[in-house]
Amino acid sequence: MAEPATTPSQTVGPFFALPGGMLWDDGPELVPAGREGAFVLHGVLRDGAGDPVPDGVIEIWQADERGRFDHSADPRPESSGWQGFGRCPTDAEGRFWFRTVKPGTLPTPSGETEAPHIDVTVLARGMLNRVVTRVYFPDEQANAGDPVLSRVPSARRDTVLGTRDAEGLRFDIRLQGDGETVFFAV
Image (cartoon, rainbow, N blue to C red; front, side):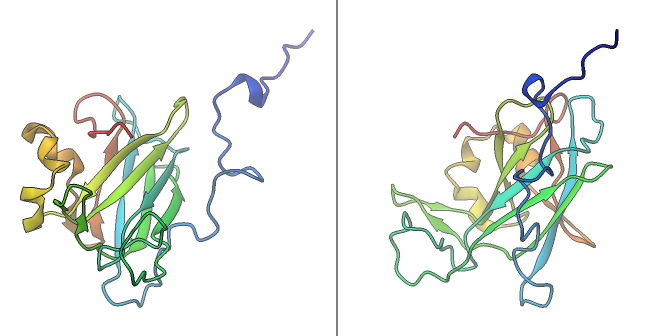
């Protein structure tokens, strides 16, 4: 007698691309290619052994160039209508990309200022819960006073800093092991 097949209720997944799954209609295109200030944020998702994760989903959300969100929780007037959200599955080599713009600085409830950054969520096989991190821009003067970045140990800050390259801004994500990306409790 043949062994019964594993059913979706018996495994963690991934089921991102199935009908009703998690993929976003607009995908990784937050802005059109011709928009002023548009750039590509790209990278590779890797597991604890350093191998690419070919079946993950990377999600980003961010403020617009003026540091504003189109959300009722943003008390400032003059919302730009900026959606600021994208979702991209990783390919066979663990690669992902987004076309976006650099966000502005953000005020905190306590009156501090957060440096321009993009919030990143990672979902992947075997993960029961998402993990959340940020990508900061290199050589950004506001990084020095960012209240979140300042709490990251200096020896690990490079894991949340993007690097500029010919394609745009590179941000590789390591889920575990040596060089693990700093993830935040949210």
